[in-house]
Image 1 (cartoon, one colour):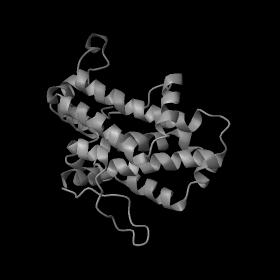
Image 2 (cartoon, helix red, strand yellow):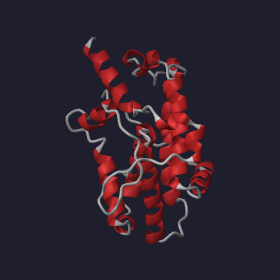
Image 3 (cartoon, helix red, strand yellow):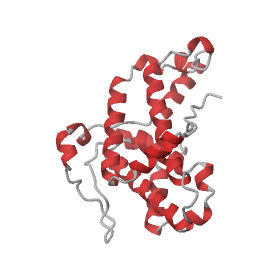
Image 4 (cartoon, helix red, strand yellow):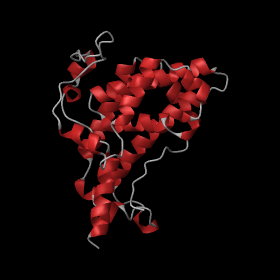
Length: 227
């Protein structure tokens, strides 16, 4: 088929350790650092590498080194997804309630990625949370707070495949004022306060990092239709 599937890579001990260390930082800081990495990759992305005629042939042996700028973005996406999965599953001694706190931490990080309009890491985190190894943890998910579950489902709706991913496409075309965590009393967004890292890195205050998979799929479909 022509659908682009960005699946998590096999996690290793190094990934697991990195995941644990990552969760010792505040969620907003993690989201900001992920965004800075994704911005750097997106700025280095070469549009010609995204062409369906090139990307669709990436799995052939002779094309192992084609589209390096796209492969770098995919590798980062897979690394984030593997990191999320490892952080939840690595410690077999964790009780469901403890795993639920890890899930909530990642949901919060995902929410900050949304506020920063980093749809690449947002999609990577959601892909991990929706993956079979994590989604089947019924007792763990039962211990996740209702507020966090609502946030998780709302973020997941962004990438619904209804109307050819209509919601995510519409969001990408909108200019938005950066937001912060919603006011729980009125459920209204408030302006995002600039952190020290945002002052140092103004790239976090403007622009968008899209989820590349949707557009790679579009380009492959267009290329196939022209054959």
